[in-house]
Length: 324
Ligand code: ATP
Ligand code: MG
Image 1: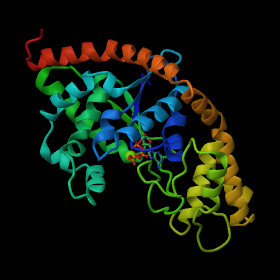
Image 2: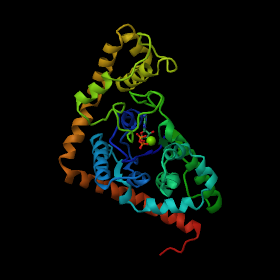
Image 3: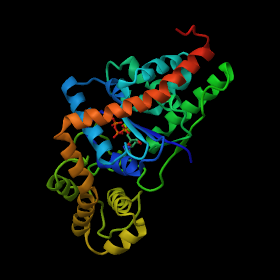
Image 4: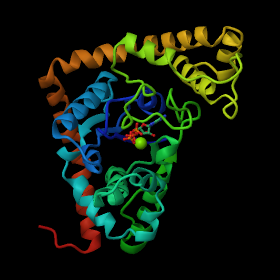
């Protein structure tokens, strides 16, 4: 399969959706690349103190998961200036039309008065993240697939214009749990930039997690059956339980079919609390030792620069820049 790359944006606290759809699927293998995408974290208005706390929280989770072991790396995107520079190069070969088609820009920009230029161009930054590392596949949730398709188009275009400089990556979307929905509004996906009781945070305490599950919206009827159209709330809980316990949706549904919604919600809450207990404890322990976080992130930065800097040079050379 080759090495893979995943970035996560510090746009909020880490959610259970992030954990199921992304973090828990990530593995520490030689060459794998994981980063806190802080440059992406300023595409919408931000508060400096809050941003810093989100960066530390995400870093602590990545490190708690051991994603900087076995020859893979964890770093902070802005610590490697090649990312910002590569984004500019790709913006200049991207087309307005293809960027305007990005649905995430449309959805994130739609209720805002002033939308930053960065929110519009950020797919170029993301493409650069991927292409700097020459990765073959990028595991993403459904919501990010379109950006990987754009990355492929930009890579193919650059290779056509300047010779074979980029590896053309494939998106890889996990089957189950690819789109965890809000517990309060199952029509919407769970997002870390939406803070309400429908969003379960990975690092909040067990009782808060239980309370959110107990107040999850359910549907009419009383049977626990999987039917995303007629029973979106229950189906979302089934998907969460299945993904976290590594069972099939059918297995979970059979187990709780006649248990009643209350007992089912309590059971899903326990699954969520138990399957995330270890990573939660390790991340919080790390947060009490910021120097250790900084040290491990700096090792990651050096590993990233060893790949990204020569790639950037190669691309600039091919594009016709006079190198220093
Ligand atoms: P934001 O609201 O700022 O977009 P987010 O929660 O959507 O935050 P991202 O930083 O966009 O998080 O994505 C991080 C990773 O988590 C990506 O791989 C994304 O596909 C995945 N992901 C995000 N939300 C979900 C979800 N509800 N279910 C499954 N995977 C998700
Ligand atoms: Mg998102």
